[in-house]
Amino acid sequence: MNKFNISIAIIFIVKLIFIGLAGFAVYVKHKQPINNNLLNELNFWKDRFEFIFIVLMSFLLIYLFQPRVNRLYMIGEETKFLIYLFGVILLVSAKWDLFFKESPLLIDIQQSVR
Image 1 (tube, rainbow, N blue to C red):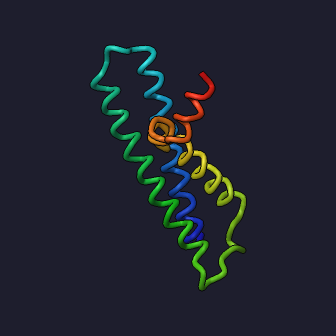
Image 2: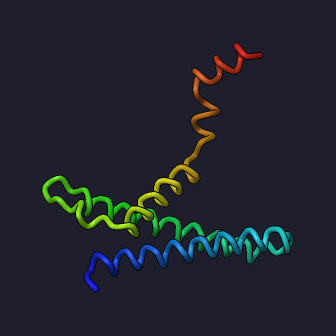
């Protein structure tokens, strides 16, 4: 196994841990809503693993799409899936309220619809 495949495997493992923590946090929130300590701990680690995933994927994108070296032949099905997940995670975790609450264009559209 070369370094590239090892890095892809590590990124997958980090992503699986993140998904597991997120799922368990949802489970705890619905089954034991008064257990705030466990929920806070789960959210703490979930946020850390999300950050690690974003950093690792950023490094992977920089490595693959470096302008001086053509590494597009290295993009396999696993890498395509990781790039897809990276895009989904960025869209889901984006701070959409900043755009929707403060956009003057949206405020004008909302006022004209009323």
